[in-house]
Image (cartoon, rainbow, N blue to C red; front, side, top):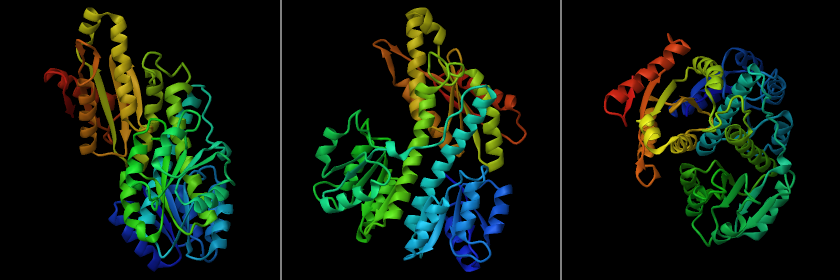
Length: 448
């Protein structure tokens, strides 16, 4: 995913170097050479992450950060304080000012992009939570609190170095007492259950009894722990493992020796991300008001979709992101009802809804549009990826078995929002794509 990054530094050379790195990775970069200019820029630009140098004249990074976090319009934007390597007191000062993260000079590319990726995802999820709260307010429904109590968080440490693990537990006890330590992979199954589902998991790259990457992969398939934020603990010589781990789905990493303030800041970032993701999932699974939830599919209903879509269109327009609509219709649904009965028809609806809810991001809007028709709105994606996603959904539905002699298929229409579109024309074009898919023989995807 791309993101809008604001680089704030009073030295032009530092700005140019960092800007070149970010542009190479396809980030959209804004720059400011003072704290005051950065504050002015935040009034007119949508920013996802701020990289803020701590030492600047006139208004230093700490005071700038305080002002950003004190403003309700900008408080949710992640701020990364950039400090010199040994400025430990500045890290503490940055935390007190409300900074979300630290980066040390000289900047390490792996650290830079790991942190930006993680923080921009959090910002995207938080943006969606705020949009849904806005929609709920319009519909007269209670909004979702965005406050997180870290004391209830659960942390798992997988490390066979007992001394190091105890040291980390002591650091993390400032956040929560719900910390478990295990020394190898064989102990995971005995520990992880409905009573202890970790929000964050730290895996040591130096663990001797198992391959840390294999352990990471197995965790990603564990039904209880797969949504845990995974962080790697490594020495400098293990950076090749860290890079691979980030590719496999790890969210972040630490380098030993561990700084307490850095550990706390990084863990808080991952716990926030997990909390916000679960907040969105809870909306869909159990916490949604019945007036905006479809009782059969447990997805958003047409009323909520119609109210929320304008917010998504505005967001995509403001941030110059592409917005897509997928219209999905179960093929021959009337025939299924006629032959197998409405009870089986209901099972088809619920099964299709389950496929949709588990195959899209928590930031995507998935709704039952009416009858056997579903609609999904996605942003921050491209034409190639949206086609791949639609084909994956089509195939998942086509290979499902509702009962021994009943296989189902679905047709899918896709369209991309255009600057000239109204809400109605956008959805109508997706519906026309669906119509083309039906007329082409069903069990098809058509992009118009």
